Length: 468
Image (cartoon, rainbow, N blue to C red):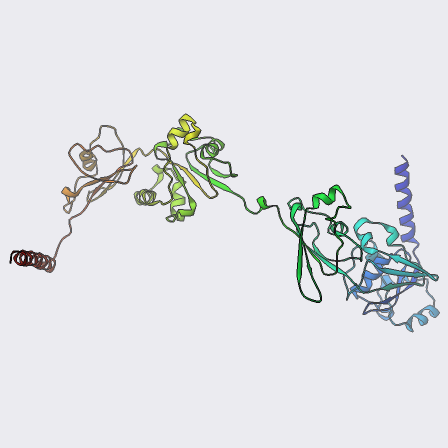
């Protein structure tokens, strides 16, 4: 209840001050390009006077707005004549002064050593402490005929990196590292407090001296030797924690419950990532599941990535042929029995995964691609007892240019080209390729004949030379 009464009293006082604020003359002197007498009102504080001066939006009495005229309703003609003789005049609208904020810097003004001269008394103010803590003792209300004296900055320091408010700050002689950390509003959550670097350049020799500071020791004891006294132009750099520099992840694609990208660390393994993804689905073919090292995945391209995400049955013949060819060409494949690993959960078969690895669980290839010199090349459903001759028959049979003695079966699992035999078995995913005979011109037959004749002559001459 007492706190509520106090708040109400403060609000009433604030309203009273704003409603019954009187115009006052305040002089600003010292280190500024805009010294002079400014007409403010008694509801303004020191920081607001400096802020207004720095804005330089000075309104003369001749150009004052109607609102400003109302603010000056209590002035008589004599006061107007006296103000016209001053160096500078300004009328600060009360609405512009309602909130205190860090003044915009003008020239080289020190906000930590502001002097307020009032009735012969010298009051030292530290506006930076007011901005930091809200301590109103360092930012009092103004009175008529107050003089604000501004001094130049003598010492600066630079805060870089993981501060909540990095930047260049004024500091006073004798202040230590912890004092300036407060002006930077402390550290971000990602700051590496164990390795704070302070760089200092000798102004005479140009020699650089650096320290690495463990700030945790200062947090435990403010008087610790690590809390060193700072000097002009020191640079304090706070880096991010090392593990925050990069995110490590593995991509899981194909027939798993939850395909996508998974974050990993240095202890993540193939099995642990597969478990995170929910494991292979029923239609997955683990016999040909792949772990691909992206760093050597030189044949990777966007078209293959798109096809990897499609169901095989929705692909066109051209897409399927391209898909099969590219899978055979993939570099960076690790030789690992993912099927046995998943079924047994045997950690001796497991292996570590690295950032950028790709795990691809292929769908079962229950298709056979018949390509080349047939009437209707394309995909056909695989059947366990179906012969290669039957697949060719179902494709409409050979064309006139078919090179029947050169037929090959390209194995799905090994990419090996198998010379066809009568009893060759066709497995799911295999491709039956029938090459075409090329029509030759007379000139091609003639040049082949000359080449053959030349080879025979070379052999005869060689034998003759050896027998001499």
